[in-house]
Image (tube, rainbow, N blue to C red; front, top):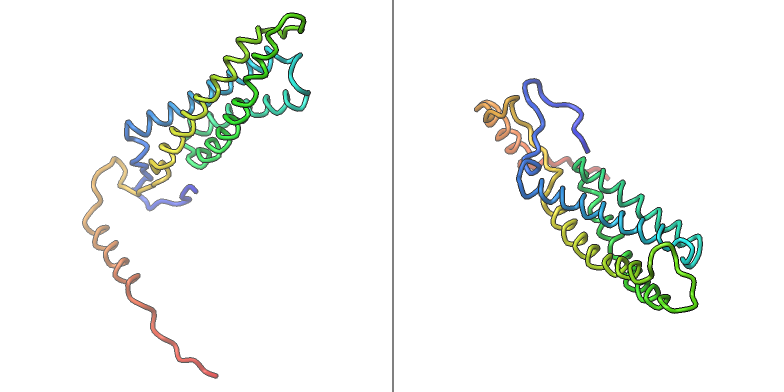
Length: 186
């Protein structure tokens, strides 16, 4: 949740977003999400006539659309979508692992071929499994990088003035004191 007010002369700073590791993780998650969406679209459009049903085709297109949306959200530093992407990647990896042998089984004489060769569709479907495993790993690494941490600092990034540090210490001491006990009446 974004802060709505900041003290005059101060700005919000997200120190973990400036780290090269976090920036690389963000870029990798977005890239793997887009690669997954592209593979899903290729398999769906290339094998449209031979998919199990219209519902399967639509579900695959929805999955691809969600992955593109997730990539945009990750590019905007939305950390909350990472576990959702990892969960959907687990489901997609299972479906891809189950569906790939079906494409290879269709590569026989006498069966109508889809727009793309069955072997290619099977290979792309199998390729989805390791891509999803990579997505799961990178998304969970990104989630643990605390992209959401915000700190208040003076405008320009200078260290906080001493009076602010003293004021913060006073507030910490007040928070540690227990509230006075109130007598109970029966």
